[in-house]
Image (spheres, helix red, strand yellow):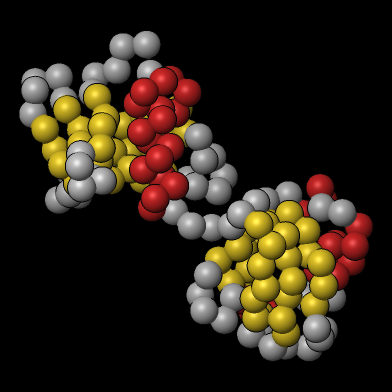
Length: 155
């Protein structure tokens, strides 16, 4: 794969983009156009000033070294744990404390109200905790029966 740019991180941990004409852009930012619906497609690399430097249709279309840098930059920028299982709730009225298993490990959070559960599609939900941290439920029907039963009390 021949990319029209190269990506590296400098000593300060900033993403550096080298364009074909040799210009360097330090402090670049990688942004997904559709982070939930199509996380591996439509990615933009922006300069520190917000100017688009490169557009990537699919992350898999870039070289392995650039793909690794893109994924690292996205991990540094994004934080939306995915709920894999709901272990329990302390109350079916809100506010309630939820004990969950996420793709980043187990955690506990407070749900202030049912309005903090937003349905993005028939299968996808976003749950916001009392501190504003958003948790993703990517595929509601794929969750275990116990989790779906608990969630049904809040939906």
